[in-house]
Amino acid sequence: MTNELIQRMAACGDCRKLAVDYGTNLIISRRPGADQRHWELPLTSTGIRLDDHLITEHAEWLPDRQPDCNVCELWREDYKIGPIEMAEALHRAWHLCEPLREICTPGNHQLTRLM
Ligand SMILES: [Zn+2]
Ligand SMILES: [Zn+2]
Image 1 (cartoon, rainbow, N blue to C red):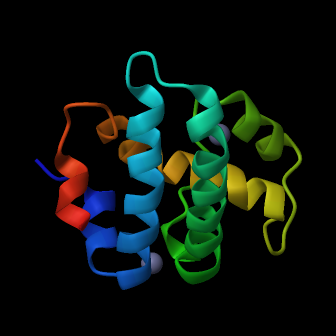
Image 2 (image 1 turned 180 degrees about the vertical axis):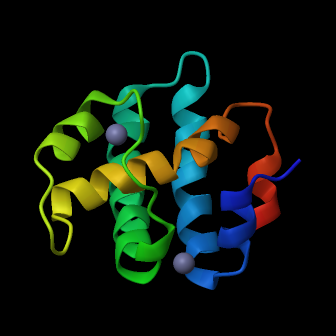
C-alpha cells in the first residue's frame, strides 16, 4: 500500500529525487551495526534539501498543528497571524515526512516506488 505522501511526491520530479536520496540514507542509518560516521552527514544534508524543497514548493502540503505534540502545542499558544516562521515550517515538514520515515526501514521496499 502506498501512502498519500508518497503518491504526491511521485508526481514531482524534485520530490522523487530528494526523497529517494534522504530515504536511502535513512535506511542505511537504520541497518543493524550501521556506522554513524558514514551516514550522519549525508542523512542530515539530504534531509535539509528535502525539507527546503517541501517548504518552498509544496507549502500547501504542510500539515496543521498536530494534537499531542508538545512543540505544536507551544505554537498554538503563541499563535500569530501572518506567514509561518521558518522554525515552525521546518517542524511541520518534519510531521509531513513522518510517513516517509516510517517506510524507510531495512527490508521495506516502498521507497523504490519513487525511483
Ligand atoms: Zn516536489
Ligand atoms: Zn508538532
